[in-house]
Length: 410
Length: 88
Image (cartoon, rainbow over the protein chains, first blue to last red):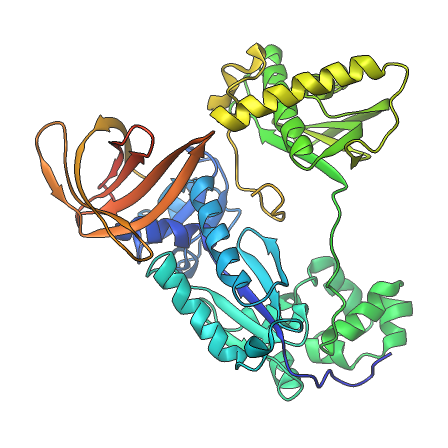
């Protein structure tokens, strides 16, 4: 194990478009620049804020706050409905720019990613990374628009690079290396560190660790055996010293979608149609990843915050909308009457074509061909050109939203 | 909420098709009521893929209102689809 700080040259660059969706809206609509803007998923005062512009944040508006509460705080706040196509465009532009510098680019979400320069071309590696960071900032302005800003952090691992990117928002460019690691951590709170939220903060405080510097100075055995009681403790020990432990490819374990009902007075038949719409959406995502599933999980949340869920496994793998819907609807019959939110997930995923065909091979192949033909039509003429008659009216309500946390569907 | 007006209005557009990072730049447009609007800034241009059909969406301003113009690359037509000017 490494006890000292990582002394190598910082070659990881983290790029973060903070307040991304609000910034993109302000880029698209020049009259909104300098104003408090929030982005929401639905045009109602009861909906929660997805993103707030820096001007809105400066006046106390927070992500997750309801629009009506934000209006009490800042009456002139402008609430815009999210426009995923616009954000996807900016994501692909950012990804394109980042990929010009190294083949090793990993996007963590729609608005942040990292460039690993370790295996970049020699010409690129010999360039000063601060200079490349400044160049990327300028390219964002030139290639997307003059109001685009980003935070850039450079360090020896992904964690410290992300930490560096959060030091001077909204347009920062900072480096953390062995020479300034202690000084930087001394300026932060425990919960400023990515991965240390309330729960982990309590764990650390239980052993007297109340600052990032104390966290850095804690010995490995304490972190491993007492604080985290797992390998996670050793990973934190390495991570804080600038060694890479987060360069791991994630695998898809489930594919799902949820929907907060637009009204609490919807009849059961209407809720069931929206569940069907979600099943079509999940099926489409599943097949886009060339996966098949064996399990379906359905949940519902009630207005008094009760959580109901049910799941079932199938003997045969499936990926068609019809099968997902049939399984989900069977489960949903036991759901409570008063519902505020519904969701459906497929799990136990494997690669399409991995399994052996059963005695029902002909039936399965016929269904696959039919589903494939429908997918081709939808790819050619646009999403939901062909879908179940049951969901004819639901598209007005159950719209595609911004996929936070995953870039698989962008 | 934001006071956006959603429209579906065919418009006539004067645009420059040139070189550079933004090869298509609408300069001004004439609305159905005959009013001419001079574009002072293109905020963002992004494509909207609808199957094999591509719409090029231009969010623009004339300095007093924001507009959304959509250019259908298959039909070669322009539509005004949004207007927003009541921010106060």
